[in-house]
Length: 258
Image (tube, rainbow, N blue to C red; front, side):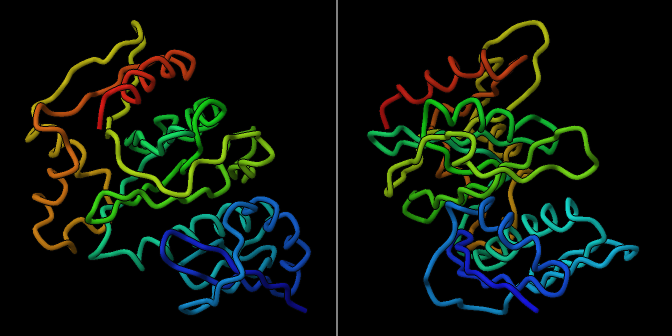
């Protein structure tokens, strides 16, 4: 027995095939991926998903093999993201970041940072005011369009595996169809207060953003391409202690003409 459905992952259209016991999780997976479901024709190999207890968990862009329901759903999220990222290699600037967009203009603020910096938590909070673009991967085309990737939000809720929650279930705002890059910032924990800690010079900022990209070296003139996304005066490091305070900082970036 198998259940299948099709998702859009950045510019990739991928079929998900949930086989055997994993088929019982298909409805949960469809709900989590509610904003990425599509009727488009898949353009590459499917992701084969299996739920087999007592097996070591693994995932790639073509398979998920896991021993618990939580592992299946989290590894599926990673596999779908990886499929889109691999497809965009050499063409897209892809940032490990969350993104939110102005519901009226489509101006998008990208908040880059390492794992554990609170990007998903920030996306939940900010996405109730601005359009939810992604909590993990923000991709930017050569003409600075932003590709929406409204994947499930990966939230820590007391278990080993992060829960995959639909942005619809969290009441997050749907962004406009056309999105353009407004600003890139780097997230940094700042326990003493809430401020734009520092505006780095363009060269320094690019050097700090680069580790938070995927397949940057596959691009033609990668440093030039990344620098072209940063304002001439440089880019901000956003220091914050909680997502509540982060809102005012993002608001400032939304207000900057661009």
